[in-house]
Amino acid sequence: MRQSEGSGRSRTGRIRRDKSAADSPAESLGGKRIIGLGRGHGPLHDTDMVAIHEAALAVLAKTGLGDASPIVVDLVVAAGGTFDARGRLLFTPNLVMA
Image (tube, rainbow, N blue to C red; front, side, top):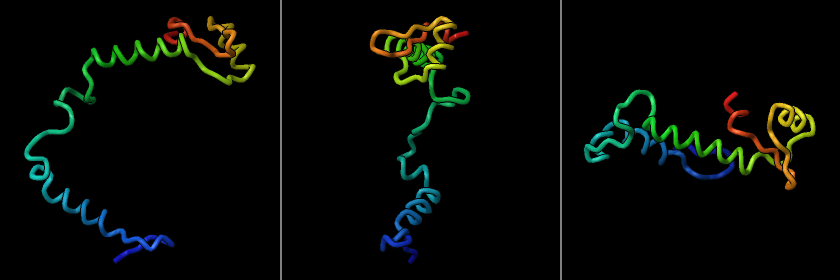
């Protein structure tokens, strides 16, 4: 039985679980798929990706970045961003997409 350094805890439980899962992956899931539907490389639909992208643009435009260094503020403002009264650096969608 292996024990991790200093903790006194056995590591065999994880090893046993990993081996058990590798031996019978379909049986442990009742034959159900838990990852995607085989649509290419990712589990998200194109519409999901668009929604995430639009949400990220909204966060950058409305919440922006706090505690930006003065040089970053200067560079982003010169490129079209704004530095608001709350001290947050805001990025327009056009700036993000550039």
